[in-house]
Amino acid sequence: MSSQTAASADQDLLTLCQTDAFTPIPEATLHSIFSNPPFVPIPDTFNARDLGLLPGSPIRPGLIYRSGGFFRGLSPEGAATIAGKLGVKKMFDLRSVREHERQPDPNIDGVEGVWVKPGEEDAVVVLEDFLDGEGEKGYVAMYLDVLQVYRDGIRAVLEHVRDGRGEEGLLFHCTAGRDRTGVVAGLLLSLAGAGTETIVLDFMLSRVGIEPVKEQLLTFALHGSMAASPDAPGFRNLINLRISSWEAFVKAVETRYGGFRNYVTKTLGLSDEDVAQIRRNLVKQN
Image 1: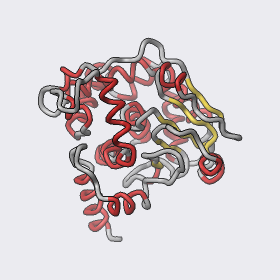
Image 2: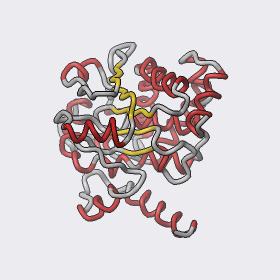
Image 3: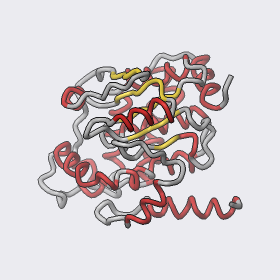
């Protein structure tokens, strides 16, 4: 595939990812997308991707995976895929206390499950913040809360990358594999030196990745936002991923922390050498 053709295909995929959440995506289209990188087939979950297979990603393939949750547990086939085929050594659960207690992660032989209790009560989505524009204000508030509430879990992910010498694969997930997982994926891609287009595409791909379980996740979003119905003002902005929302969040990280790198050093407490080692381990094998 020529670079021009590949760029066109990536743009077509990004355009598809901007489809309204209430508009179904045809099964044949989904099958084609899920059968190709960066998506990876993991039984019993959804929205599973290899960050190293994103177009333009500097991360080595086969090292960093992201996914949705495990609503129905994990079959032997799913466990074998994660531990054997993908070579995952640690699986990080980025969910709240309530979510984790209600459905703990499955045990997988050869894979260490890691859940770090959030440092404070889980953030509450304020639907009124999503009323204006494309909901940028709401996304900024929600994602800044992720960086604060889940900071200990995020630090654990980064410490694993730092200490794993680029040889120990990891998978991280939340419930939808969209917001908390998306923030951590964007952070890792940023630390690895990925370009904006790559990071934005990864963020937006969750629109397609959650399609197979969209009805369950809509119910989850209704409950979490305390919306009376899908027609509640602001709810459509909450459930639709927009490029402008990610851009607003990145700008807010710059304003509050001085960028993702400063968030890692000044808030999470990792050193400049830690950050340099994380990047080396993400980008190439030592």
